[in-house]
Amino acid sequence: MAAPEKEGRDAAGRITADRTTGGRTTGDRGWAQGFAIYCRPRVIGMTFLGFSAGLPFLLVFSTLSFWLAESGLEPSTITFFSWIGLTYSIKFFWAPVLDHVRLPLLGARLGRRRSWMLIGMTGIAIGLVALAHIDPRESLGLVAAAALLVAFSSATQDVAIDAYRIEAVERDLQGAMAATYQLGYRIALLAAGAGALALAEIYDWRTAYLVMAGLSLVGIVTALVIREPESSATAPSYRAEPSVQAFLSRSPGMGEKSRAIAAWFLGAVVAPLADFLRRYGMLAIAILLFVGVFRISDVMMGSIASKFYFDLSFTKIEVATVVKGFGLFATILGAFLGGFAIARFGLMRPLVLAAAMIATTNLCFAALALFGHDIGMLYAAIGADNLTGGYAGSVFIAYLSSLTSATYTATQYALFSSLMTLPGKFLGGWSGTIAERLGLAVDPATGAVLNPAAYANFFVFVAAAGIPSIALALYLARRGARESRNDRSAPA
Image (cartoon, rainbow, N blue to C red):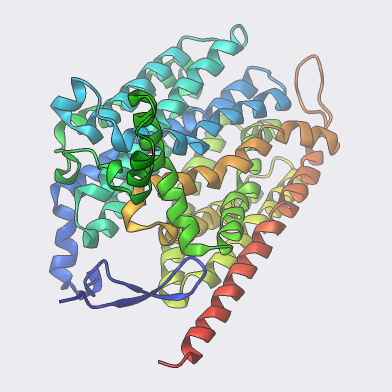
């Protein structure tokens, strides 16, 4: 018998039927059962994997930027380091390798998912230890190389953890897995942000990064303790794809090695893209553009934030307390509000609001630039920004999840999450240069900013950069609403 259908909405807001859950949702569980799912070993283990995923992120972005700012580097030099984050934005290119290639020796002992996790986690630990032993004032190139190793290893770890999360439990436990992952991730951000800054203030940056390297053992131990998902015991066969079978039948004259490589590329890389384009047609162009520009304002602001706080004379303790500590709780509150908004209003209206909030909250930082060193205004700006970040994060993750097909979940999610940050990371590398072109004066001898109030011009510019995201969100919402009305008016 066919599984009962559950009504939902697709990426454009269209009403669709979801056959994947058999009509059952976690809302059908009793209260006791609902809480009991968080006691399952794999759900608990996801907390520690989330911690491992969140730990390296700030250590190659805002925390590292604060260290570089304290070392006397110019804003334009510091923001170029945001390009290291492009590794997170291009992880789609090697995600199919993690989906289809089993590591020799290690893969046989640990399995495909855990072995790739362990490789990524080990690279993170090595990179953090290297950063602890390098002085940015003497070897800036080595700092960049070590940070790149951390970022690449972290992106690889993310792909493996996402695949594990999807495969480790049945579909109706995915919400619990995502919740515990987010909990661990946020705790790690607190450790790598406020914790690292506090250690640097009390001791030094070398101690801070060595402690963070030690915390990477949390993920390594977890990867060794958890069990490999049963569904990943063997790599999925890309040869089952019709396009691959057609290629193999038409290319018997090719060399065997070239033929195998081409078949793998078709099945592991081209097929997921073709599936997305086939499902959405011309609307796919607008969707991909929207995914790419959604976080431009947010990422460009983040690229220069640490230097901004430093130039307004906020201390590391103040930044740790307000930006990292208070900001964490504002983010969690925003995340809950985003989940509530989706449940109450559907997906597209909260998504439009999220796009507008991301752009306009940059004006709070413009006001902070004019106020100068004002701790109350810092609380207000960080509260608005992080509440928005949590809200937009919940809504956008739900949107990205709605874009994926069950057949290619891991690879397609890697594509969308990569595209989500790529334009912003690229433009973020020029944030310091843009700020200087908009009137920010820098002492060439010391790298110190001479007129911090001029940062206001930059934040107004960044707010304006969010206008395309708002326009595309409105277009997708209206397109979805129009097609939804057409579906309801069509004869049964």
